[in-house]
Amino acid sequence: MEKQSFTDLTAKLRTFASERDWDQFHSPKNLVMALSVEVSEIMEHFQWLTEEQSSALPPEKLQQVREEIGDVLIYLTRLADKLGVDMLEAAAKKLEVNRVKYPADKVRGSAKKYTEL
Amino acid sequence: MEKQSFTDLTAKLRTFASERDWDQFHSPKNLVMALSVEVSEIMEHFQWLTEEQSSALPPEKLQQVREEIGDVLIYLTRLADKLGVDMLEAAAKKLEVNRVKYPADKVRGSAKKYTEL
Amino acid sequence: MEKQSFTDLTAKLRTFASERDWDQFHSPKNLVMALSVEVSEIMEHFQWLTEEQSSALPPEKLQQVREEIGDVLIYLTRLADKLGVDMLEAAAKKLEVNRVKYPADKVRGSAKKYTEL
Amino acid sequence: MEKQSFTDLTAKLRTFASERDWDQFHSPKNLVMALSVEVSEIMEHFQWLTEEQSSALPPEKLQQVREEIGDVLIYLTRLADKLGVDMLEAAAKKLEVNRVKYPADKVRGSAKKYTEL
Image 1 (cartoon, rainbow over the protein chains, first blue to last red):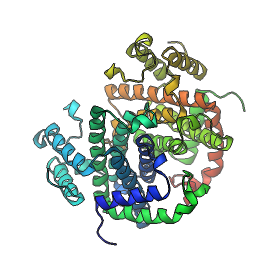
Image 2 (cartoon, each protein chain N blue to C red):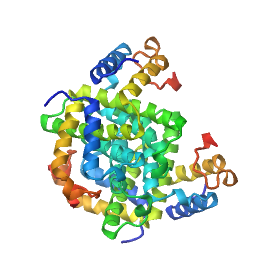
Image 3 (tube, each protein chain N blue to C red):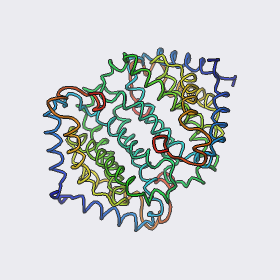
Image 4 (cartoon, chains in turn blue, red, brown, cyan):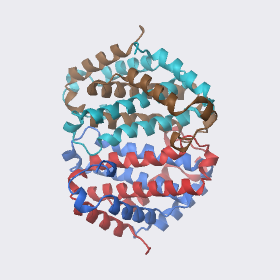
């Protein structure tokens, strides 16, 4: 498979929905519900595992999780496209915000929320 | 801001976690919980809106949703990285599977699940 | 079926887990994950429906949703039990808080969050 | 506070919504979104905790979780009411189904899903 990009994925998802006349269902409200459902399909694989087990999935389980991650990215990309949001830019900006909220020398080794620091 | 790529984001998130000694918290189990929490922060903006309103957010609300989408992509990227999953490839493959499950001429205009077709 | 009560359900769930030696899996962390997964199983039924359709489910679909609601209540009851929380009291108290946060004459017909009032 | 019952809570929530003219927002579709958002507010407290820590919350944290559990029960009760579902009966029936799916002598000490047994 050729190297994928976000732009390619966005375009392919548009075509996929359009060919099926599915844009009528793809309101942001509905897409966020679908996104949430797909995240839970990942979660279902992890709910009874210890953290340690979650880091060492057997190959068959990992393959199932890989497919669910694909589904999550599909709906996230679709949601961002419908809202006109550049996801990668949004993530990069948020990371900059987090650098300020969580200064490395202040939070090292702590999982507290910035409001609790 | 320069053009972002997935590879860049993955690398930046590794550095961010490493500088804060946060890898100890970033088990896949914990990351999928964080991912789910961030998706709900998007959902909170949409829960009482009609579908139509969800497609026409006022600018301030859209900016908040943009930031939450950034958070979701951050945790999704981090989860995929920890599991060794190539998200874009996973999404592209899943899309191929969906093409077969949902043939355009069979599902046009219907939101039924493939098990109900 | 005899009239059920919360206390009965809590007790039955304890026995059910104990007979299966499942308390080892029922940490609050794991139970909240399971609760979230079950809520998504309800959500999956509603994601592509209009609000109007969601209020008029066909009987077969309603039966499926009923079972998922049962699952959600099971995990919520189990989580509350493990944390020593009286759910009904917690809900009643929260309702009192909400009465103050959302005075009827101020919020009538508006879905704004109290922080936006 | 007097002893609460489910029936009381359902009735109080009806009055609460009616006084605020909020029934227009309380479609089952919207209520399941709100339910999911509230579950995530519980989850946020647990995402970075170990399972052991999740079983021994400090009092202040436990109080916050108690309030979130109240919110979850509120939306679950409201959703069930709008759908005409008797939650306690649904949970009791589901428990009977689970007794058959997961026979104690077959699943003791295992967290496998019934489809994997």
